[in-house]
Image (cartoon, rainbow, N blue to C red; front, side, top):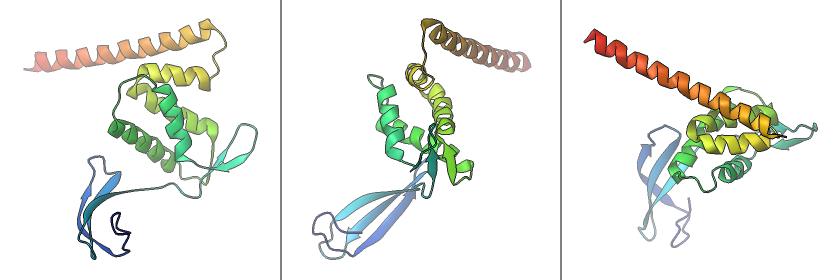
Length: 169
C-alpha cells in the first residue's frame, strides 16, 4: 500500500477492525518513511462472474452498474452513503450465495428488487417500473396494491405478536 502523502511503498498496519455487518475491514496504517497515518477499507470483490444479458451476450460483472441503477432509483430520496454501501453488499452477498460463474441479468434484477423493496418502497417502484417495463397505469397500480397488501400483512403480524406478549405478561 502506497502512502497517500509521500508515495512511499512501505506502510504498516497498526489496527484492523471489522465493520458492523462484517462486509469490510478498516485498516489503520502508518508510512515507514514520513509516519503519516491513514485508513483503508478492504472489501470482497466479485471476480470471474459473467452476466448473461437478455439477448445472450455475456459481460463481466460490474458493481458500478448496480451502483448507478440504485442511484437512479434513489434520486431525491433520503439515504446515507453507508446505508447504500450496505445495500450493495447485501445484493452482492445474495449473488455470491448462488455460487455460479454465470448469472442471468434477470436474476440480478430480481435480487436487486427484493433488497430495494425493504430499503425504500418509492425507489423499488421506480426501479420496478423500468425493469419490468410497466406499459400502462394498470400494471403500475397492481404493483402498488401488492406492496400495500404486503405492508398490511406485516403490520398485522407485528400487532398480533405485541398482543401475544401483552396477554402473556
